[in-house]
Image 1 (cartoon, rainbow, N blue to C red):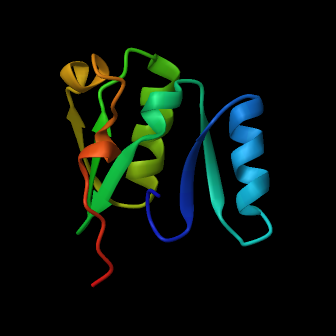
Image 2 (cartoon, helix red, strand yellow):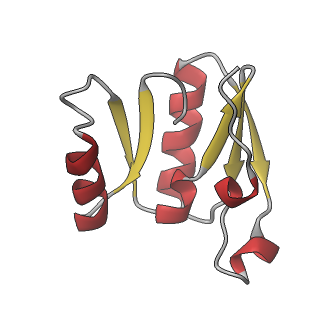
Length: 98
């Protein structure tokens, strides 16, 4: 989630399958499709978005645009060490509903 209404999802069949299983459009989510699957892993809290640094310029531009449109702050995080173990930014997160 980028916020309560916005999801990042990868382009292609895997993203299609996830969005269909979630019934994302039927449930009213805005969906931003990204060509870099790992770039879909973001952590958002308190007006800030932590995003995995990606070399995919199209994904970067779409993330930056979505964050800016929602008046949030963006911080790119180097996750290259996590990638060595096939992990992503969200693997390091504890999500709480407070």
